[in-house]
Image (cartoon, rainbow, N blue to C red):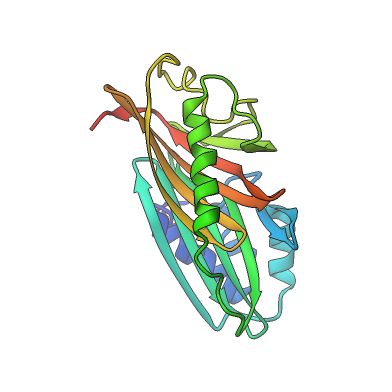
Amino acid sequence: MTLTTWSLLSQPSNVLHRYMAALELHDSRIARHAFAPGTRGRAVREGILEELPQQDAWAMLDASTSAPRYQRLRVLDQTRRLALAETYGEWSTHRLTELLLMVQTRASWQIVARAFTRGRIGEPAPEPDPVGEALIRDCLLACTDEPGPPQGTHLADCRYAYAGAGEPVFRHPANPAWDLGWLGVSRKARLTAKMEIVMRGTIAAAKLVRSDRSVRVVNHVLLVAVDGGWKIADLTCSNPLPAG
């Protein structure tokens, strides 16, 4: 990676601008450094969960002949080496909303997971869903309260990206990212949880902070609406932070 490329990817917002430029020019080469290898996209269409590997997304982008007429981005949260972001774009025929998990590597920021939803232009935006938000809170709280693997709270192939000093490390444990022992937090610790949730139709994102008297563990989480409820699809974590 050249110094020029690194400088362009040194902040989460720069990564997002590069990705959106690739969408405008239908050229995946512009954005490939912005994504970690193996990144995948999740979507729910008519109640069915779909997965889009990033290589397939690049092929679709390069074959596209239309460009977005409007785009915007937001970094929803940045905590140390983790970031949670949202992008929105409108084409002549559809609109696309994406929720993105990002981690900081030794060289740059990278997108490690994405969830997206498409809609027709002119179609009303989803109404606020307090029932769905309550289900999401219950899902996240279950992962905090249970000392063992949570039951039914995550997809079978859920994985999490650990943001350490180098490249992101992907894991597929039975107890995804709630393995506090691996993070250096005692399983016997009594944890409190705070969360911030963003819902976009059939996808959602959350910042979850679990803490005891000495440490805080921060997770950014992507969730999808399936099987009449919400399940965790992907998440990120880093080393515990001092409590406070």
